Length: 48
Image (cartoon, rainbow, N blue to C red; front, side):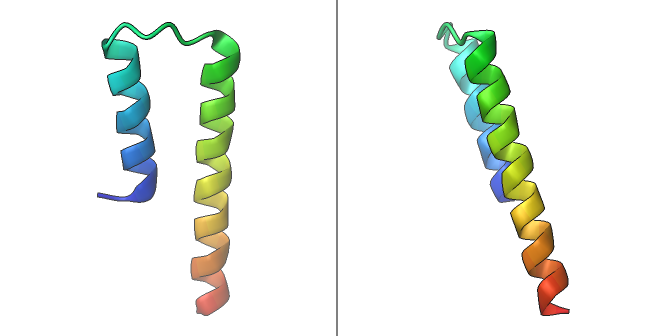
């Protein structure tokens, strides 16, 4: 499982557990995820 899939699963499980995530937190998590994917892509492209 990729890192971003793990993060997504974590978010979904938090939501399904009924944890109250404010929209701010959701936005923060998705930005974190985007950044992670971007970094990963840069690294992969940098290695080629």
